[in-house]
Amino acid sequence: MTDAEKKEFEALKAKTDRTKEEQAKLDALTAKADADDGEKTYGEPYVKSLRQEAAKYRTKTREMEERLAKFDGIDPEQIQALLKKAEEDEKKGLEEKGDFAKLREQLIEAHKTELSKKDAAAAELTAKIASLEGELNRTILGYEVATAAAVAKAINPRLVEMVALNNMKVETTDDGRRVVRVLDKDGQPRVDLKTGAPLSTSQFIEEMKQIEEYAHLFAGAKAGAGSTSTHNFQGNRIVNPWKKESHNLTVQAQILRSDPNLAARLKEEAGVK
Image (cartoon, rainbow, N blue to C red):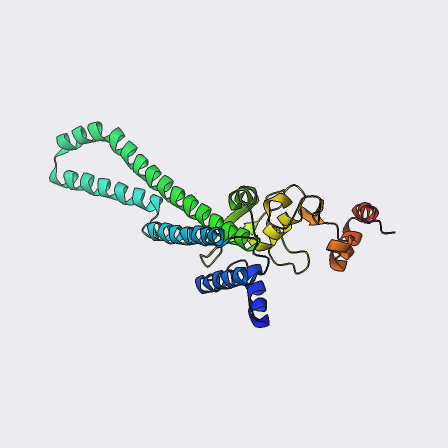
């Protein structure tokens, strides 16, 4: 992989809401990076299975979007209003004909059943739309995590996915795009402490590799050898920025300014005075 391709690869990995063209480019660069990897951590059959898994999620995402598009613009409350208007129009027509006996009979027989039918129809439609929305969001999450796990050389992508999905959700932006957000312990979107931008799925997966309890899920990241403990800072899980392997002056300054007690504990843990 050339230097230009490496820069493009890292930029696409860090991007949260990629277009289909950008995702396709990322997949291609990922495959090339795997092919260039001299260590050959994975055999070709395993790499091929990860690519097939990502392709399955892409296909399912398209199918969910097509199914959901059929309900675009449908408002359950509007349907109820149309049904009510149809009932009122029929009633008005009977009144104009003077057929009051038939009108009275119809109202007695149909009042409760018609109301229940309308409510049931509206509830069923609302539930179906919500179900499709949920399924589409789960598919988008699964694809994002599966792709990031493959790039991070996950030994068992399914286990990585189980951990990651408990810390993520899909949000719909004002322009209708669906984006994956990484959440903190309070359920709020996390941000990159260096840039202030939303934390990406790839960044979260890379963070997992540095946590001792998850390091064994990734090739080359052994628990107790290169992994480290994490700490909570402003709702985010961070590695100790005073340690040599995770040294970060920007995060140090933020902690010193916002939480001197935590800074003192981290410095002591890192053996820094």
